[in-house]
Amino acid sequence: MTRYISVLIMIYVITQASISNAYPIFVLQGYENPREATGRIVFANCHLANKHVDIEVPQTVLPDTVFEAIVRIPYDM
Image (tube, rainbow, N blue to C red; front, top):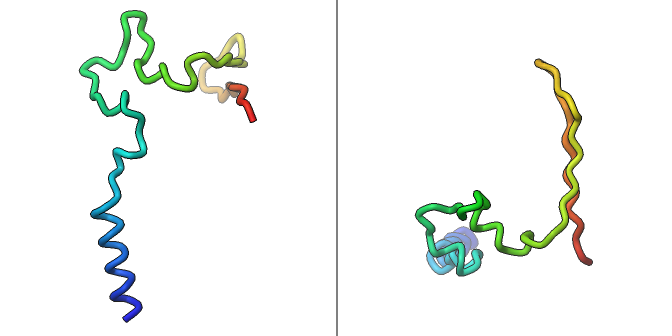
């Protein structure tokens, strides 16, 4: 009986939940070319568009070496 109820709940969740509800409306438009004339991705017009970003990368990278890049995006609490 418990397995039957579990299967019914799974079927309900799969058929009734729409994944498109998780995305903002402008993402659902389906752009043919997702880049502006400046090269910026259209989807960058969301909450990260006006954020200051700090990136730390080494000045030189030699072949066959591993390097680290640090990206900091401040957020409001």
